[in-house]
Each structure stands twice: as C-alpha cells, then as structure tokens.
Amino acid sequence: MENNNTFLSDWFENKISDEQLKQHISNDDFLAYQKIKNSLANFKMEESNIEHHYKAIQSKIEKVKKQKSNVIPLWKYASMAASILVFLASYFYLTKETNLETGFGEKQTIILADNSEVILNSKSTLIFSNLFRFERKLVLEGEAFFQVKKGSSFVVSTKQGTVEVLGTKFNVISNATDFFEVHCYEGKVKVTSNEKVQILTQGQSIRFYNNEVENWTEIKSKFPSWLAFESSFKNTPIKQVFEKIRNQYGVEIDFPKAIENIKFTGTVTHKNINTAMKSICIPLHLEYTQIDSNQIKVENE
Amino acid sequence: MEIENKNHQTNLCEELTFKLIFDSEFKILRNFLVFRYKNAAFADDIAQNAFVKLWENCKLLKKEQAKNFLFTTAIRLSLNQIKHQKIVTNFEVNFTSSNANKETPQFLMEENEFKIKLEKAINNLPDKQREVFLMNRFENQSYAQIAALLDLSVKAVEKRMHLALLSLRNVVENI
Image 1 (cartoon, each protein chain N blue to C red):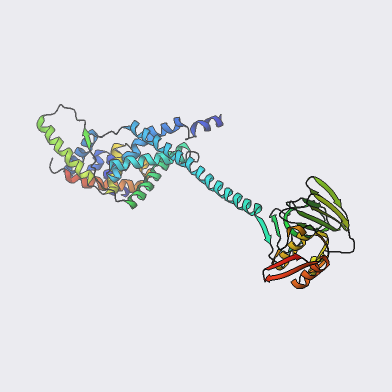
Image 2 (cartoon, rainbow over the protein chains, first blue to last red):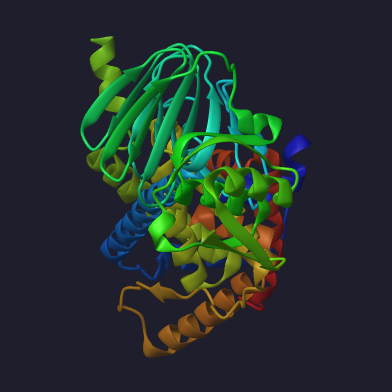
C-alpha cells in the first residue's frame, strides 16, 4: 500500500473516506481526528489590515525610487569633479609661463617648441607661455638674439615696442626704461614702438632712445658680436654702454650725468673688465678708477 | 488579438496589475511567514519588502511568475535577515472560534479549553510541519499548491501533514 504512510493527510483532504481511514486506525483515534478536524473548521486567523500594508509597500517603493535617483547624480558629481580637475590641470599647464632669467655675465641658449633658437644675453629676462607652439609670442627685457624658424608670425614684445617676423635672425635690446634697439641679420622684421612702424631688412638696425629714432646699416656680421663675447656699439649713448658693462661684469659704474649722452662706437670684450674699460674710456678721454670689486668711478679727464 | 492579450496579462509595472497581485497574494504570503517564523512584525516587514522587490523587477517578470517570485524572495529575505539578527519568536498563532452559540455553557467551556490546547500544540509543531499544516487549513492551499510554493514534492507535503496530525492526536485525551 503506497499511500499507507500518509492516510491521515489524504483523509484530511477528503481523498479517502471515513471508512477507508477507519481501516488504518482505531475508532477512538478516528473520533479524536474528527474532533480536531471539526474544531479547526471553526478556527479563523486574525485578519491584519491589508490596506495598511499596501500603503507601507508604496512608501517603501517611493524610498527605493528616491535612492535610485540619488545614485545617478552622485555618479554625475564624480564625473563633474573629475572633468573640473582635468580642466584645471590643463588650464594651469597651458597658461603656465616659462620665465628665464640670466644673471651678470651669463648667457643662455633656449630652443623653443617650434625649434626657433633664442640666445639670451646677460641680465635679461625671457617669458613665454606653454601655449607657445600655438601662438609664437615672447616677452623680452634685456638683449637676445633670435633665429626664427619659418612659420606663422613670431612676435617679441618688449616694454619699448614689438618685433614681428616670419622667419629670420635678429637681435633685440630693450631695457626697462628708454632704450630699444633691433638689428636684423637675415630676412625681414617689423618693428613697432610708440606707434611708429619700421620694416628692417638684412643688415639694417633701428634704435629708439630719448624719443629719437636712428637707423643704420651694417651688412658684414652674421650674428651679434656678443655671441663672440664682445659688445659692439655704434653711436651708442655712453649710459647704454655702461649698462652693458654692468650686465656683463656685475659692477656698478658711477659717471657724471653730464656725459651720459656721449656716443661711443667700438667693440668691447666680455673677458677682461680692465681691457673693456680702457677701450671705452681712452677714445672718449675719460678716466676710470676701480673703487672696489663692485664699483668703478668714471670721470672727465 | 494575441498582442492585446499579452498587454493585458503582463505589465506588472502598471499599478492596477500590481494592486491585483497584492490583493490576491499578500495575505497568504504574510500568513505563510507568520506560520513559519511566528513573528508578526517580522512577517509584515518581509512580505512588504518582497512586494517592493517584485515592483523593482516588474519589467522582467510575467504576471504568472509573480506568486513564486514573491515566495522565493520572501524566504531569501528572511534568511538574510535571520543571518544578521536572530529573530525572536514572540508570537503565537492565535485563532478566533466562530462556534455557533447553541451549545450548553459546559460544552462551550470544554470546547474553549480544547481550542487553547490545540492552538498550543499547533504552535509547538516543528516549523516544517506547522507551515504546511496552517497553509492548508487557513489559506486553503491544496497540497500541490503548497508543494509548488515551497519547491517541495507533493509527497513531502503529504508526509508533513500526516506527521502533524499524528502529534495533534495527543491533544485529544478521551472522547
């Protein structure tokens, strides 16, 4: 008998009749089971408030919805923060400037991103941004020689004016106050100062000093003399000459104001200060005395 | 026509369908959890959460799968919760008797006494027997339906019922 072991549950589900059940159990047992069955029929579960549960489910669903919609913005914030970081990093990188400065008697050669070459003379400052490859623009104070690769316009701005070129070699001198000199060694450059525009071709020079403009031509040299550790002057005010000496040797030169506009023409070495001072003072009938290693006094003879 | 039918029968995400399932399945699910864990608050919470999970998965499920999904989810949720905190069985399944009042006071008193004894015996049944027994008696689930919900064979359900009845037999001392 396969169903033997579950005759009670069969009877409970009315699968077998009372008589069939009685074959398995005693009469007492049968009456007991019948009593249980009848009592259970009168039992009822306590009902719980169904509507209350539905409302609870709905509010839980709302909470889940909110959590979900909160997760997305958080992820968005993260990506926003990341992009701001990238933006700031690139902003700082791109707008960062390179600032080069030479000391007394120092020279520095710089190869720019476009392979143009700049040789910076002593006591000079050159500033250019990391965006140089996109906009060829430099700021110069002091003296520098430029060998510019051909390409889009190349601009050197100084306090006294700007020099604009397409591809050439030229020398620029510009001090902090009043002196601005450009010499073109190759190609063509456009010099602008105080709204005056001048185009220089090979060998031409221009000088702005004391509201005076001076032009001259000298073809023989291929590069500025200072690259060969000399300074060449042509009709240069003595004040400017002494400033060069100061920049090369790091000495202060005292001279009477009366002589500051005397012009000097000649070449002065960067290697020996005594030779240099002699080559300036003897032709101009000036006398110099070295007070100490940092100071030289110049007087009229 | 077929397409129309499909639209009608599925989409659990629609509130109307969802409410329909709630009305037909919530009480039985909740009571099953009461039978099994003997903790009403716990059962309420788990049953509600199972419905939340049903809603979260409403796009993936068909209406016919809802009932099984609810029971499976509820059991899984219960096990997860029990793992974290031992639930206290602070609840006894209580019943109200709807006996007609045509009997004598003597009979009613005996009847009531018997009812209390029977209740106690049911509460003390092993969990597996109790949940099957009560599902059958109070939720009118056939053995086959219970077997499907709990992923058991019908034979196993019948066996549990049989054992439950055997131990309830002791409540009746003398007739």
